[in-house]
Length: 211
Image (cartoon, rainbow, N blue to C red; front, side, top):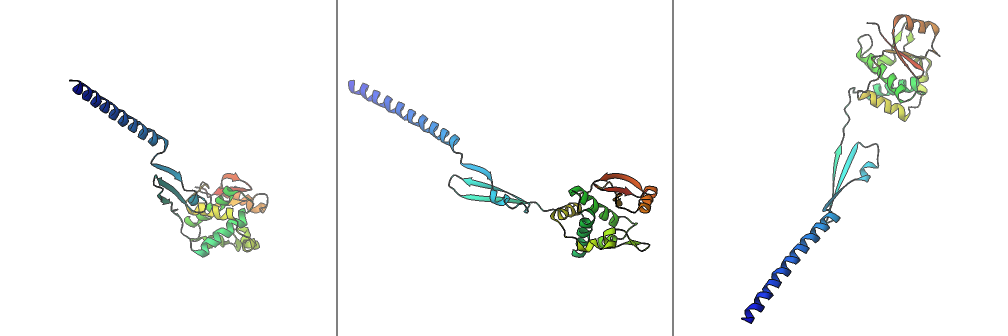
């Protein structure tokens, strides 16, 4: 009888101890999981180091130390496709006309040139628009006075032209611009009498043809 009682007591202790160990193991696993997740996600700084690359990388680091990188590359879509000759013409005329303007001022000049390319009143290519003459007079004064050929194209001009080529347009449809401070008085009078004034930005006034 005593042997049965002792045996029963030992079995009860074993069951209690086993249950305690299971509960403790489960709690330790839960705490470990909270303290150190199996995966962490961080920005891959090596991919973001070069700002000229349009890419964002995500690094996944597993508990084992294995690392993988997923990279999504954003490809820019261009509204205007220019060959090298026409691109250089656009860069040069923007630099020559708006070298002292801010980024938006440069973008506006690029917009006007591209607006003319699309307008039936003007030639069909950037280079033809830039070198167009009316009654023997260049449409763009830097072409006539030679400044067009002497400029050094800045990084900001390249940025402005790229924005224009991808379709960014803040010109409100402008087809003309002029710097009243430096322009011939008779030419500015023609602008005032024959064109529709739109707005002024920096040193330039912008106009479009009347409806």
